[in-house]
Length: 488
Picture 1 (cartoon, helix red, strand yellow):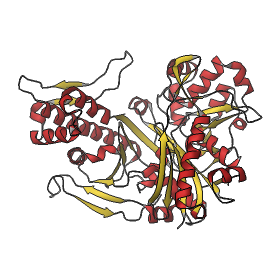
Picture 2 (picture 1 turned 45 degrees about the vertical axis):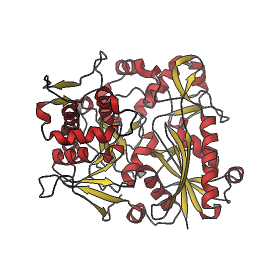
Picture 3 (picture 1 turned 180 degrees about the horizontal axis):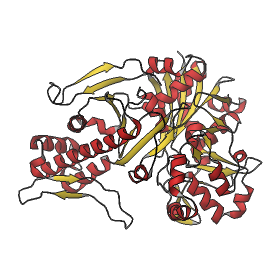
Picture 4 (picture 1 turned 120 degrees about the horizontal axis):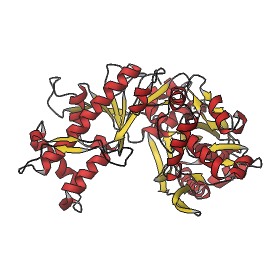
């Protein structure tokens, strides 16, 4: 049995996961991850890399001992985007990793907009207005820690900090660079204009490596620490979102929906043309795991809105363990239209800090089931609006929408989404699409599979199909199918 080990650095959990050549998870272990307060400002959030590394080692040791060192073909690393740290010429970390949760960069957004042409910056790099972007962090670092900024020999993302610990080789995962707001979509490389603005050079970022490239081999000390054999390769992966796309089996131009606290609608497509309307709609375009493809995406609050309704109207069920079951059943009984109740689920605050959400059509006899139904219908209509806009940008295919995430556990919501879109949902039954996608590249990079298409064909997950009610199928009818071969 050959397996690859994915070391996954998540915001909530740190994990090691062993995956075999058919895409089956054969072992896993996790410990909690958390940010720390900055010692200079308790409102600021940082990541403690020594703590992250120590916990990942613990996870790796447990999983490798379970599967057997002789069966480990390769290691790879996935994580969230944008976060990293500066290092000096001797390889010493100069400053803590500023977390994407940290508010220190919020005012930097307006500062950068005043110093650069924001629309041109967006057209060049595709990244929307998110205060946690790497560009804003480096601009903050330059202004508030000028001496350390001058000492910075290189900036390294978290995924590459981990692979450096494993191999001793400095690198930059291509998929991580694409989240930074510092790349150029035409060049598929660092933006000369952004580097000039920051007073940096391309040499201050370790060499870009593509997903599936061999970064190096595990050093003898690390092999001994993890209980591995010698010369195990470490394969580049990086930003979790890009690998969820591949791991789900989504084909080129096929819509992909990740449904959780946020919903992210995205695709693997050719480069879309961006304008001020795309920026206002919150469209972000990241570099795909394969050079030449791009990942246009729109995101919005989703399950977080459902949770708000649960907390406001289903308090009696909070401790019963039946909360969402009761909520869904009461919403199902109401029927289409929610008895005239309309829920507008735009909970993101405006520039004045005021939310845009609303409930309309309330009366003296309105019940909580009608409100619950209205929120599921409102979110489904919101998905349809975002789908139509994204389809205009990148010409999404007419096929089904691939869906992953915790939101897929809600059968009523699945049906409402399929009805709103008027196309089938292909719900990925494997919850770990990100690590499966990273494992596909690891098996390819280690030579087990000849290319990523072959790896995806062998390792893709099973799907559950939810058809729109209008397609002569009973509501909520679903079936499980094995995906047909798709191209990565």
